[in-house]
Length: 385
Image 1 (cartoon, rainbow, N blue to C red):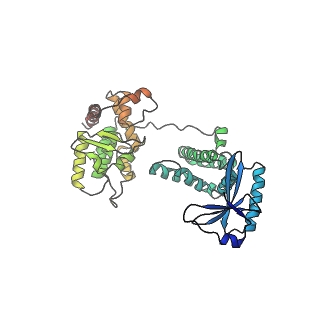
Image 2: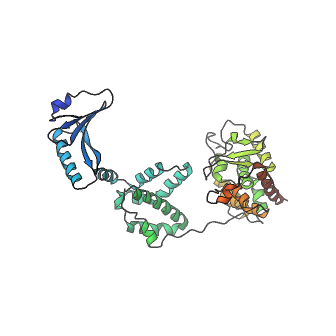
Image 3: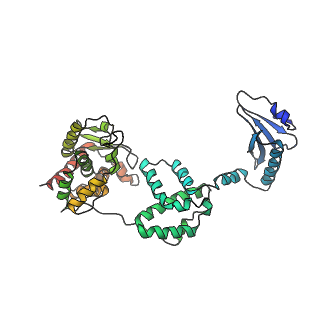
């Protein structure tokens, strides 16, 4: 049982500091006021039972807070509790009342297991909302501000704007769920029916441009040829080609492994002969100690970034703009052209089958992937003739 006495500076200063654990003492003038003594500090708190549960509300540290202040604060807290106020909820709201938009974004990102690329994308998109961040508190961001900003941003780039506002909506929904704010001002876009679905890109390398594209790729420096070959012969995402590790390229077994892909799994892929020959040439030319297969020229410790200049050179030569994901769609289209079934195409693209029970039952073996990959390779190489 906690020892009770009238709190005075002399008595509190003389209390013994425990080596471990903590002790509590009760003030006889305000019986719900306690002093908790631990090896590191002495703190005032209020102990109150509410709805059958004990609640400890910290007031502050002694001697930074005076005994008289602690007593007055304790009486105030007890009065609020008797009126039905949830003190912990009140303190939590006060803590987050001054949050800015960018501070909320960082809390959101910390609460999620996101890839570095996704985190960078969130931060980049949120630069569009710099004006909202300078406003101050989240609660000061109004629906009218959201509407005005949406109108301005949609004029310059509707697709990028739609993505940015999806991110903003997700962050505000997180704030609502944790009761940082009462409601999301971004919901006004849904109410006003201003959220439009963006049309998915369907661009591929046209059949009559594939030969020209391959010839343009073969004019690029060796490192970038490997990058483009990985895209067209394995259908990988650009991030997967960039992050591919040397130790995950096995030229003896003719396999490579893309680690921690978009769906959270590792993906083993068969290296066709055309790609294998180019990688062998590249490894002979660049016998570096970098852990990445494709590394930056100025810093071998980092993987290459998406080679925008190389894409621009190729686009100019074939008079047609192609992105990394367009090449991935081209790979999928070729797979369908050579007669591969849907489940195999999905497997080669490493798309998740978790939403389809039947497809999740199918576990494609490497030998089957080898046959499929060789068919795709044969089609691509036939376009060189």
